[in-house]
Image (tube, rainbow over the protein chains, first blue to last red):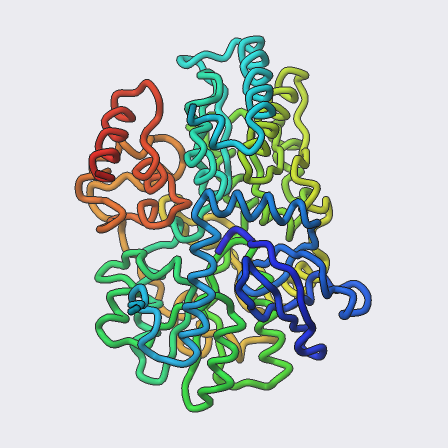
Length: 106
Length: 391
């Protein structure tokens, strides 16, 4: 929750609400881009950002994104964040979701 | 050698360690008479332990682990209030997963959820907003927790809720700020601090100028740092260089992410939605002036304290810390985690008594996971205990 995770903006989903789809380590997650918006919102597509709890907070270059992601993986934080994103999605649907680690059956 | 495989750039790390050692020797720093450097942010604490920097740097450098883990400084009374809110039948209580296992006086949010309260772990306050849209008959409360890194997210969520005129979305605001507790620590005559590693992602929001007082009024160096190992080593070197040159300044090692003036949109949203509380209680540190935020009266419709008469808008309860734990001394760096009588005995990550054992950013959990400090008997035994536990 305190460390941001790099994600690449892949499309604008809701211009009025300043929402965009980001690819975070292969997982797609809608994020708010108000804090990194300077000109045309469409210009953000393709850029890398540091995402904190669903908000893009800083524009970074691809190299910085890669090294930050590696550090987050070393710390176990990247895995934790992706888990929290999945829990967040589940919590929208199912009141009992997220109580324990979801049981995955083969 | 472990060293080579752990660091992306082992040569750079070795060169930095050698430069740190040379400066530490020049400054006369020894294990008995070390230079005390506080890393403020829990993310840095985690990184220091993960890469073993505490053992790799010159023995005259001692890390003091700061209060920058929002879960760790959350008083038990606030957890109790979260549970009180969550147990109201109309409420869907939403929180970052980090807070779920923090013990309250009776139970944790995890235990309250198991007992039937509608508590949902979300990734973002935007998830809580969406829950409010989808459940107009329910009251969705978001637990606003964290330093300046997460504060913009709840501020922007509240602004969005106001634009949509949602009437069933509130934030239980427990946001705290970094500079004030640092001032409190600097004012504490028992604290010996020679320099600070400043938080990276907090500073991305607030910039580096809120730390000016540390250099100006207290003559201590502070270097805002990234959290990769070479970032931290470079920052330590920058601090030692300032000490060697007998100067104190705010420097930015992490300029590739941290603009000196912070993020304007975030700061504007925070200023629009929040104002400072006169005082706020921290676990282990007590009351600290102006260290917490509350929702401005203009947005009171989105303030869970106002709506439900709880927290600072209700009857304040003080819940003492668990007897026999030394969270406060550990939090202020006066005691190393293994010196706490409950460390690894009554208090483990599986059954935490204090919040420092819950979060991966807490000093106790970091000691438990990665082993203790070099050289001290307490540290050695903690390392062995952790090793045994891992097996």
